[in-house]
Image (cartoon, rainbow, N blue to C red):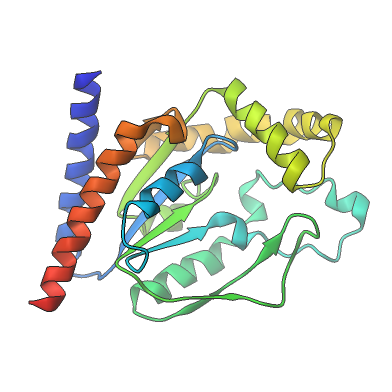
Length: 237
């Protein structure tokens, strides 16, 4: 275990070193956090953000960039494959990352799983020192990967992920138990094996056990805090 932590620490420091070289060109650190549905990505992101200054970290969820399909019938909406890369408007997400990196604010979409549509309202997002992009498919797109300074994959046992998916989809997405299982068997599981699990090879860092891996989260948070302090000193100096 000590060796694994050392290796984790080494890989993260190596990634930050490369990022510091890139800072000669870019002025924003972009971290991509991917992993299967129910893997605990959101928990990892929240804990990392909570350990850093709220004014220095911005979180952009992949879910905000699902394509607007509000015009479909209720039956058609039940067949939407949210776990396929084609469901995401990656071109807009890439454009928004480029805008943030160039110092511009963006209008981030607001998406509803209940209506399968984007709201008329948007969320204004300003550039910060660190931007975390989180989602199951963010490492599947080459243009997205090219814009990430550090790529993290949250790896969690499939049984644990299924239990979390059942709880989430019943409470947050209006599905009953049978609908959740049918959706998992027809869409989530095969899409995970085809599009999500293979992206693990692109990760600079793999975090096992999701949000329960406090040591890994502490290492990431500690180094990010150090990185942001250095950036603050550069700006003040």
